View 1: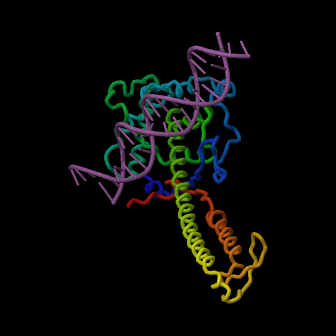
View 2 (view 1 turned 180 degrees about the vertical axis):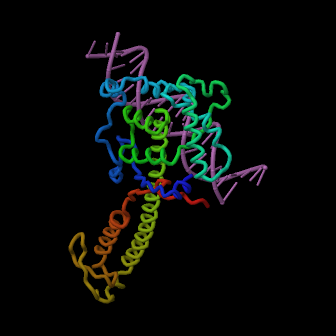
View 3 (view 1 turned 45 degrees about the vertical axis):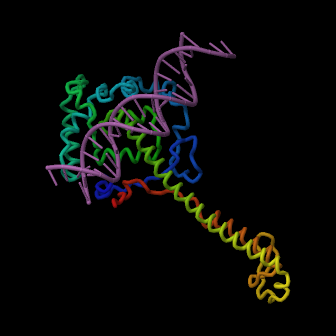
Length: 290
DNA sequence: CACATGTTGCTCATTACGTCA
DNA sequence: CCTGACGTAATGAGCAACATG
C-alpha cells in the first residue's frame, strides 16, 4: 500500500497531468511530455520500431490482447504472475511481503521454463491472481512514467526485461497509472471549480445586496443630497477615475461597480489560481485513511 | 482514390485480489 | 478471526489512427 511504499522512503513525486497528449491542460505541462513519443500513431512501432525489434517479444505483449494474459507466457523466462502470487498471500508486513513477493516471482521465474505457458493452464481457477509489484519495480516504473507517461514498444520491452515482468504487465501498469493520474487531476479540478463556485456565489450575493442599496438610494434622492462628502478618494484601477471609498453617494456608484468588477476579476483570476497538481501520487505520501 | 479489414494502443468501466484497521 | 474499506493489478469493450490489400 501507499503507506508502506512511503515508509520505504519511496518518495516519487507524481506530477499529475492530463495524461492524454491530446488534452493536456496548460497547468499540467510539467508532465514530462514526449520528446520521443509524440502523439504519434500507436502502431508506428511497425514503421519506426519494427525493424529495431522484431517482434516476438513485442508481439507477446500485444498478441495477449483479447487472450488471457496470464496464459500468454511467451515472454522469455517470465511466467505468469498468477502462480507467483499465490505464495504471496497471507499477511505479513510489507517488507516481508516484498521480499516474499520478489522471491516468489524470482523463484517462479527461474523455475518456470519459457515453454511452460500453461502456468495457469493447469489451474484455470487460479486465473486471476494478482502480482504485487516490488518496491524496485514500482520505483523504476514510476521513474519511467515521470520521464514519459506513455510507452513505446521498445521501452515497454526494455522495461519488461529490466524488471522481469511481462510487457503486458508493464503496459497495464502504465495504463493504470495514467488512470490514477487522471483521477487525481479530476479531483484537483473539482476542488478548483468548487472554489470558483463558492466565490462566485459570494460575489453574486454581494452584488445583489449592492443593487438593493442602490435601488433604495434611487428611490430616495433626497437622502444622498445630505450625505457626507467622500472622505477619501481612490483611483479605480480599471477606469482610472477617482471615487470615494467612504460613502455610497452617486459618485461612488460607478466606482463601486468597478471595484466590484475588479474584485470579481481578482476573485476569479488572481486569488484563485488553477491548482497545479504536484506530488499527489500515493508514493509521495500515503492517502490517509479515515 | 475510396473502401474494407487488420493491427495497435489508448481510455474507460469494472472486477478481483491483497492488505490494513 | 471476521469484515469493510481501500489500493491496485488485471480484464474487456469500444474507439481512433494507421497500414495494407
